[in-house]
Length: 181
Image 1 (cartoon, rainbow, N blue to C red):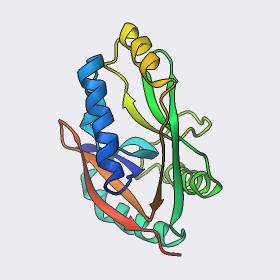
Image 2 (tube, one colour):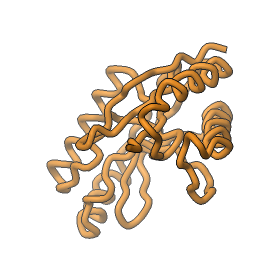
Image 3 (tube, rainbow, N blue to C red):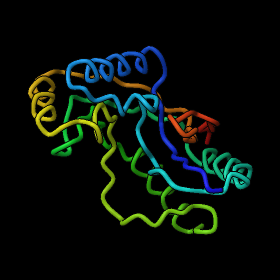
């Protein structure tokens, strides 16, 4: 049976905990908890379905892939939205981040036997989701009122790519791959 996976960057502590606290604030104030089903992250490759038996093959592929990139700085800056449901921490598009995501997506599209990844091509907009899916339209506007003028500026060094798998209830990190060119 095919399982659900995605690939992401995850900030290290204490930034990870700081973002988790904002997600909890969103849950309490705006009744949106769906983003709590995954650790704070920046998606590199959207969820895709794959046979569980192919995990070892994917691990090998991602191990080699990660060795082609060196660690880089990721800048989180303020908040933004995808109306009318998504509120997020914005990520500054660095050349390193864009290249990493682009190459990963190219691999996914070139291996349909492994990745069921046939999503429409669209511009990459890196972000850290705080609320989506279960955020009502009315609460979307209230949340945006709360976050639109709030300052947030943090950085972290991205030195790993993470593979997450859905366990039926939430997303779990199952592997990490070191960036080490």
